[in-house]
Amino acid sequence: MQTTIAAPKKAPAVEADFLPLQGTDYIEFYVGNARQAAHFYKTAFGFQSLAYSGPETGTKDRASYAICQNKLTFVLTTPIRPNNPIADHIAKHGDGVKAIALKVEDATSAWNETTKRGGKSFMKPTTLTDDDGELVMSGIHTYGEVVHLFIERENYNGVFMPGFRKWESVYNPPEAGLLYCDHCVGNVGWNQMNPWVKFYEDVMGFRNILSFDDKDISTEYSALMSKVMSNGNGFVKFPINEPAEGKKKSQVEEYLEFYNGEGVQHVAIATKDIVKTVTDLQKRGVEFLNIPSTYYDTLPDRVGHIDEDFEPLKRLGILVDRDDEGYLLQIFTKPVEDRPTLFFEIIQRKGAKSFGKGNFKALFEALEKEQEARGNL
Image 1: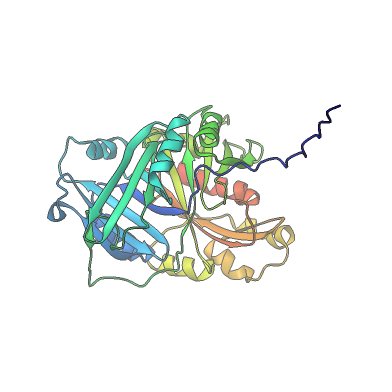
Image 2: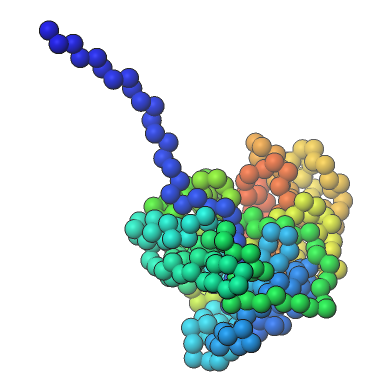
């Protein structure tokens, strides 16, 4: 009689990350005047000149200035002539983020994996070459007119990428302690948060690590909802906001109105000494939201012991919040252009992995004061 031995049960397979990301490579802004914008970011935020692309390098339709600070790189791009997609983008949206470029080992695989899962192609895998090697890039569309570029630069040793030359400038103000992109926040339209959450889950393999509803993020007048999406290793995080019903217009509604659509609301930048960085930025002319002084009355009771003195935090308007793994310190600039759209967050994490839920009310009240002054609340 034949005996059949049952095969041992296999442990459940761990699903491989089909889109391994190494972090943010750079963020590209479409702006009305890239030369002046580069001067602003160097002067106000401490960026350094890195690379330039334009008519002198063979690029005839645009000029781009790459600036950097530690592991943070911005590319500021402006059209040379009207009647092209870059000029149309600026006319519609004003200055804003066009591309969030993500560093990958294989840009071709990244494009194949995301497009076969439903991502709409923005750029097929393209190899750029010069005397310093080759760089491969590809890209897909996301919310609004924002795109994600996949950058493979292991075989490139140049200053930035082919088509750019080193930008040497005698004017390079000292850096301000900005380290890298912590996260980028997107504003999407009514009832569009969950569809975009599903996009990041299905197309890019992200997972929803935090959710906030209108009870978490609200004041007497306005509210929003938000979900935080993260890639597998946590190097790339994208909170997504949508409006919620309130008595008056929320900050997300104001953004959508003035940006004429969905887009990046703010870029959060990490620092290891927020008091020093914010003090420096204020001296350089960067304007931050004014936090109600009453916020600090209960702060010690709410967050417990922290390493920093409370008085400088109160003087500078820095917010503090704690989660199960530690605490964070954060502050938000006012919009950096005349349209009330794009702004920046400066953040220092002391173990915390969250996004400052305990600060939402104070932040919203500060934003509403600005909205009211503009007549948009």
